[in-house]
Amino acid sequence: MPEKLLGEEEVGGEVQREILAKLKSLHKKTEQVPGLAVIAVDEDPTSPSAVYGEEELGKKLGYHIEVHRLSPATSAGKIRRVIRRLNDDEKIHGLFCRFPLPLHLAEDVLKAIDPAKDVGGMHPLNMGMLWGGGASFIPCSALACLQALEFTKQPLHGKTVVLLGHSNIVSRPLALLLLQKNATITMCPALTADLPEICRSADILITEIGRPRLIKGGWIKPGAAVIDAGVTRKQDGALVGDVVLEEALQVAEWVFPLAAREAGTLVLTMVMKNTLKTFLSKTV
Amino acid sequence: MAAKVINGEQIAREVREQLKSTAAFLKSEGITPGLAIVVLKSPVARIHVARLKERACRQLGIYCRVHYLAEDTTKAELEQLLIQLNADPKIHGVNIHPLPPSFDHMLFSQLVAPHKDIEVLHFLNMGNFFRGEYKLIPYVAKGIMRLITATGESLAGKRAVVVGRSRLVGKPVALLLLERGIAVSICHSQTPDLAAFTKKADLLVVAAGKPRLITQKMVKTGAIVIDVGVNFAGTRLVGDVDYWDVKKTAGWITPVPGGVGPMTITMLFENLLEAVKVQ
Image 1 (spheres, rainbow over the protein chains, first blue to last red):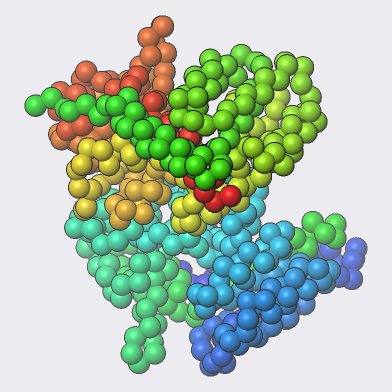
Image 2: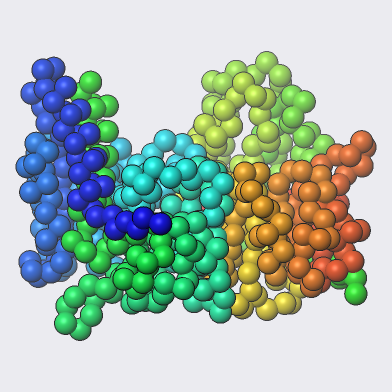
C-alpha cells in the first residue's frame, strides 16, 4: 500500500493556486483587492500565534492585510469598537481572530464580528446556519481538514469516520460536513475503554484530543486516512500530535499532521479562500 | 428476559406536574407564561395537535393563543403576524405548525425573535446550541434525554448509536450524548452496514422514519432502545423499531405510541417556561 504523508504546503498550495487564478481573471475588471483584517490578542510577539504569517501569505496572494494587535489587558468595549470599525470598513472583506483568545474576551470578540465578514466561521449565526443547512462560512480549521480529505480524492460517501474530540471548531463542524457527504460518523468525546477498537473501525480517523502520541499504529485500519489535528506543546517547546506518526505511516494510506507542524498555514489559506468569497460577492 | 418499558405517558405526566408548579410560581411573581401557536390551514397543519396543546396549556396554567390563518394567507401576512408576536408582551414563545410546501419554514423561523424561538429553529439559537451553550435545547431531543435518564441506567463508558441525522432529532441527540461523555455514532440511510453499528450500541436511538427498520438481531442484548419513529402501517401507528421482536432481548424500550410522543409536547412547554425565565 502506498503510504503518503500529506503536507500543508501541498494541500494549501493547491487552494492558493486556485485563488491566484481567480484573482488574475478578475484583474481586468477591478483594481480592488480582497482585504483581510486579523485581530491578534497576544502580549508575546514570539508566541506561536505570532508566526501565523498572514502578511506573507497575503502578499503572495495579493491581498490587503491588516493585523491589529491588542494586549490581553484591552477591555471588551475597546475590542468591540475596533471590530465595529472594521465591520464598516469597505476595504475589509474578511475579519478573522487568531486563536486561542483569552477566555474572558472570546465571546465578545466572536459575537461582535459581522457574520457576513466572519471568514473564520466562528460566529454563532454562521454555526447555526451550518447546523441548519443554510449557506455560511464554515469554521476554518474544519474546512482545512475537509480540504485535506478532498485533496486525497477519496470518496466520502458511505465511509466510516471516527472523530476524537468534540470542539466546536474542528470535530463538531466536521461531523456535520461529513454527514452531508453521506459518511457515517462516530464521535468520541473522551478516552473510552474501547477507543482502540473504535479507531480501528475508521476509514477516516480524525483526532484533536490533545494526547501526545496516543494513537498507535495498531489502532489504525490498514489503508485508512488519518488527520492529526491534535497539538500539545512539550516542555522543550516542540509541538507533538496525537498520532505516533512513524507507526501511522506504516499502516495508513494517508497521514496529515495538521497542527504539529508549521502551525496553521492551511487554516490560514482557508481563511483567505473565505475572504475571496465575500470579496467576489461585493465586487462582481 | 423481556425489556422493561419506558413509559413516556407517565414520565410526561410527572414533568407536567413540575411545569405546573413552575407556572404557578411565575404567576405569583406576576408573569403568566404565554404561548402563541401559528396554524396556517393546510393538510399538513396538524390542527388537532394545536387543540391538544391548547387544552394542555389550560391544565398547566399557561396562556395559549392559537392563530388560525386561512388557506389563502400570503407570505407578507404571515410575516406581519410574526412581527406582531415578537412585540407582544403577553407572548413568551412562538410555535409555528408545519406550513404548506410553498412556504419555506426555515425562512419564517428566522423571523421569530431568538428569545421567543422555543422550537430552537433560529440560526442563532441553533448555533449557540451547537457551540455547547445549552440555554434552549431542541425539544424532541430534550424529551429523549429525559426518557433515557428515567431508566436510571448509568451511561458511563457506554456506546450510543443514533439512526437518523435530522437537525431536530438525530444530530441534537448525538450532541447531548456527547456532552455526557459518551461515544456516539450517527448512522443514516447511506450507512452501508447499519447492523454492524446498532449491534454495538448500549443505547440505541432510532429516528429514521422507516417502519420496523430495527429488528431483534440488530440490537445488543440489554440495550436501551428509544424509538422516535412515527409511521402509519395502514391505520396503525408503528415505530421504526419492531417493538415485540426487539422487546424480547433489549433492556429497555419505548413503545409507539406512548414513548417519545407524549414527551415531545411537554418539552415544548418546558422550553416556553425556560424562555420566560430568560426574558
